[in-house]
Length: 254
Image (cartoon, helix red, strand yellow):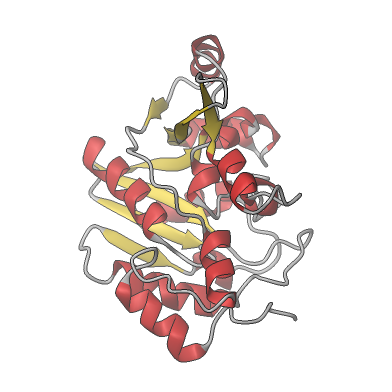
């Protein structure tokens, strides 16, 4: 049986955190391929910084060109109307009738999974590969330590701006189920009791052993607008295409 990983998101732009998540899942679960599906623009979200779908797809193709196990898909960009994960899964099952499909999601997405369109059907058709939260231990003024979520770290580094990476980009379709940045892919499962609860709800759940990388698409965009280098935050080929076309230098207004 062929094993296929499905990784959906806006990829605005794709960065090394995305690639590391996909590779960690591929290696751990012996996936034959990971299909990256580029999401169209969600109608209910501000689109000032969302690059055109075809441009994001082109960047993704550049990013994964040298990895024989990775494949880019513009299936949802070509689909008319709203785009739901269940529709994408059913399309892939027609294309790969004998394959098992594993959907790569963040643990925040697992907690809201029951709000997705036809989530019960989806849970029967896929295995969920859940990426746990990236945590960083920080020393306190009192000499103790505190554990920060990546979204908290980003907020501190941006002087507590009100819009964190997670609030900006954890939705890219009406299912509330997609991830743009590695931070959303690493949001929290609150406790072992919580995890046990979700495992009981969705038996086909596995945790991805993700080493963690503190790169976000919003930080990439911010650095580009500030004229800073993003080389090695994104693959060199992606960096070259962003520079060539002037992507993200000014907010995208449509």
